[in-house]
Image (cartoon, rainbow, N blue to C red; front, side, top):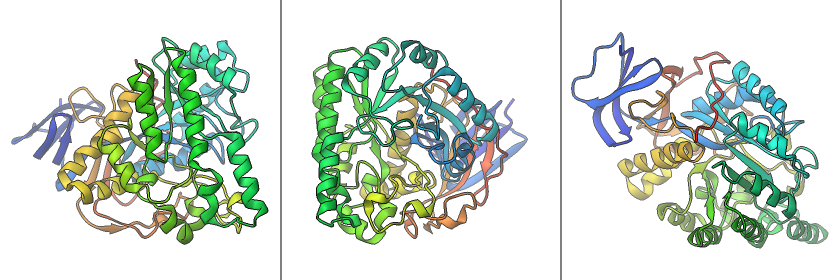
Length: 449
């Protein structure tokens, strides 16, 4: 029996349905159509608003600062932005997700704190343990993540080439991607030391301290290691088009090679925005100068797998320092990823094409990539995860979220659509003004295939 009907401009798996409706039963999408809708105890008509599949953010960092309780503010930010599933990275404070027991603790935290659904990455220590890898696979991690650059010796260590090869072989036959944070340790260390000695410590030198060659060298090494196996190698963020071309070249050789785009690379320019935003815009790999157009072309050519936020909501004091080298890398993005991407795409392609691109790159593609078989589409049999975007200009204010960090590089930006409601498995969790669901509604979503 249909319990809920949602009406609006439905961006369904089959395409745009004007004056469409979505019928929901038992938390699932029962039917999608136009014209007369099924009878239901509750109908919500959103008029000219877009009804998109809830976004699946393939790269978030919920526990980097406060550990597993970070699921609460992170998932609240998600539903405020129309994100219904997050794929969380394994580098939690103080213990990364390297064993089945740690993963089980994190799953318990999801069921205690989350208001949206959550899939999880696993990782390995510098000396991988094959039994721990198997334990994480058996408990449904959707991917593994390692780094060629050491951000922290325990929580975020560097994994050398031999250990990387061990992990790639261990993942053969599992279908799980192995994601890489792709920066070369020695190149970054040398460039940073040189800039510091010259007194070049302001924000505009961040990109120079981690030059594109550091990113491309790490990417190339990783892909060559993967080429000796049948495992799936994935680059979790590339900031220059040459990196995506490199991935395509390996894919053309028959290697399972993919790469994703972070939304901030499509919106910010280092030469224009770093002097204005300084440490607020520090991410790794860095925002580059004059790459926005080329990266949009990469996306439009289908060379990236999906778009993610790389959300990391550091407190403001970690983002403000005279030396860019003493500023934490990462910034919040969950609240803005969906409206920001839609707005930028609409300027290039128009609203209809923007809606279709958004549904593809922010929902369907990441859901399929991570094996989340009931997520990412408005179609019968899928979870009733729906983001409602009202077609109205609004000025983004990070302070509107009482559980957020109180700052954003996107502060004051004008978006052409506003998240006005979010539904997770058929239940409204955000009403356009406030989160309406209590912590614990979210569920752990293991990989399926």
